[in-house]
Length: 150
Image (cartoon, rainbow, N blue to C red; front, side, top):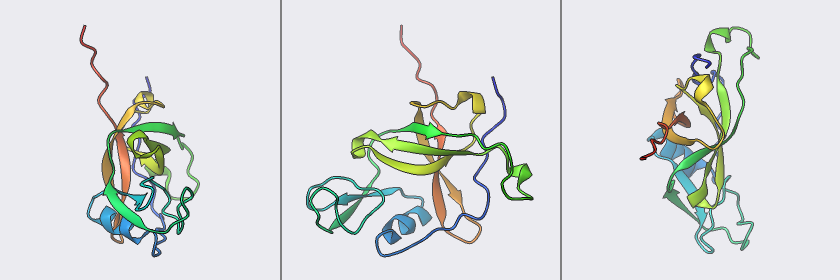
């Protein structure tokens, strides 16, 4: 088993804030994960677009992320793309899915996990990576494996 540990994402993350994404980033700075849901048809939509793709209305409610999240996809980055970031390897960009939120998927990172324990379909737990310039981004840790009761 690979015992190397997934590290935090490298520096240089640029957060783009606009009228539609500001509630997400404001909540993230407080370590709260809020997801946008249409105030008319009650379907989640991520990213928070100006118009609901289902009913075409604009209203949004921002709700706490519901239920459990699962690892949908990931890759392991083991080569420095930016010179000087070699000591930040390996890091694990990932997509996490919230089935109870209409399958909303977030682009994120898996952190603090042995690489050999990262697997698609595994439950993940929300954590936070505070940015040096302020704000925070949601990251995820692998949840403890389920213990079967036999």
